[in-house]
Image 1 (cartoon, rainbow, N blue to C red):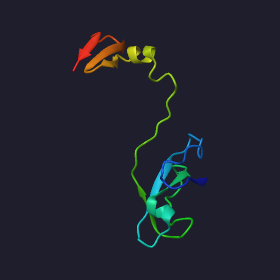
Image 2 (cartoon, one colour; image 1 turned 180 degrees about the horizontal axis):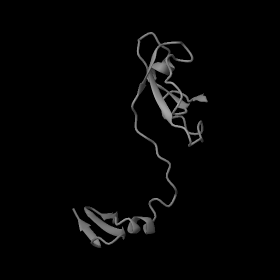
Image 3 (cartoon, one colour; image 1 turned 60 degrees about the vertical axis):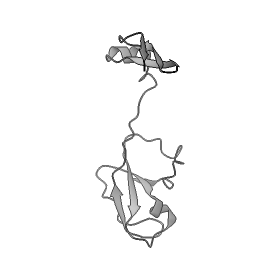
Length: 112
């Protein structure tokens, strides 16, 4: 299965809702390419799928590039209980150089 997202201009919000397959990023290897593969394109592929060799629009050769991973998180990841359970302390800025504790076991205030 292969699905293409739009160029890498961070406009791809609603395009992919599937979390079971990784999104691979590709860029053109030559200057003779279309704007989409020149700026970068993304492909939703199975782990077993071979890498894309050419741009689906212009046929220019592509290479897979390493990019930041996007990991799904739940809404409670930064909840007070979850922060405390994992031994972290969270602070909120209270003024110029002053931070107050909102969760955890650390000091009540930090002064910069």
